[in-house]
Amino acid sequence: MKKGSTLLLKLTLFVLAIPILIVCVYAFPVLVFDVIDQALAGETLAIVLLGFILIMYAAAIPYFLSLYQAFKLLLNIDKNRAFSAQSVISLKLIKKNAVLISLLFSMALPFIVVVARSDDTPGFILIGIIIVGASLVIGVFAAILEKLLWEAIELKRENELTI
Image (cartoon, rainbow, N blue to C red):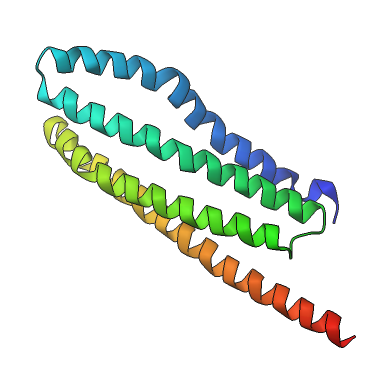
């Protein structure tokens, strides 16, 4: 397969990584220090926001690990090793990370509800639910692809033995 055939997908992975990286490196640290100051002043909403921000930081780790595994998967496709055990491992890790992100955002939903009630923004709750659902869909999709890929590898092995 041509090396440029997955170039657009690789660029998309970088485009998906850049905003989250900017938020984690620049926006959240400023916000955390501000929220800590407010929490020390006794504001209860600041404590809730601090818990939400910590969960967001925790969710960034499996997010970046999933992007890395997707990049490795695209490299395997470029090297004509799409039907390999490495690809199955990458899909398995993407599945586990997607489920972990979904669990983390499920834990963040109570924090989101408190913030949404204080600001009177019900759309904020919907965004949290969409993130939980989207990461679950990605996890299920990765699980299905993992199973299909494993079956294709088994068929390939059987065909190599019969020829």
